[in-house]
Length: 226
Ligand code: ADP
Ligand code: MG
Image 1 (cartoon, rainbow, N blue to C red):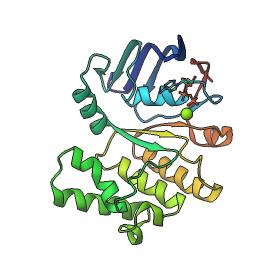
Image 2 (image 1 turned 180 degrees about the vertical axis):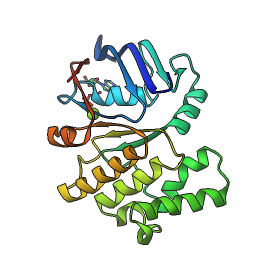
Image 3 (image 1 turned 60 degrees about the vertical axis):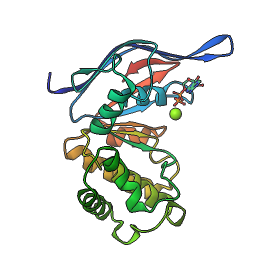
Image 4 (image 1 turned 90 degrees about the horizontal axis):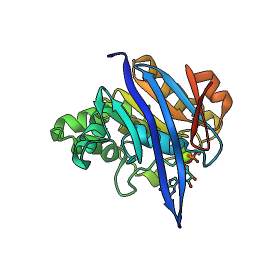
């Protein structure tokens, strides 16, 4: 099963909503092969982010079984989950989620800090990653001094800090103009070509069609493959 990075069986997630429940995932069953580029599409509120964050071990399921890299996740403690996330998953968000008080370099270094990399190693790697995404000249800038496109490139460098096999991106081009969006898609494609598994939520059918090997559609928490 080494070619299967993700296996999910009957995943359910509901959130309390007053006296009722908001159901975000209904019996989602799927497999993702290592190295696939998968787009997740669906209307607003259909459960796309919940699905992506479940895959990234950020969501506590209300039911089902989930394996990432052959490891069953639903039984793990918070501490074990944090270790799994830090080792296997790089996240990229629509609104970048950089820490405003830290330079680009320090933001990129952070996952290495949580992973207990030595200071020198951490700094060198963060520098290399920022060079790779074309930001050699911007390392000491804080997020407020960066454009949206630059901020998202910092976020991609940060996602790569622990060299994860899985990249999860939630509408990564949603806050960018089309030129910057294109740049980000090229970077994600590059990560895909390196053999990483990429899963991306997008509203844009054209971006999904052009970049993804496969599209998962979700509607009212129900997964439909297309
Ligand atoms: P999408 O990303 O497709 O817009 P979400 O996964 O964010 O959808 O949300 C799916 C459903 O779950 C929605 O009804 C939303 O209101 C609900 N939901 C998502 N996150 C939470 C939360 N943290 N607390 C309560 N309800 C939530
Ligand atoms: Mg969302």
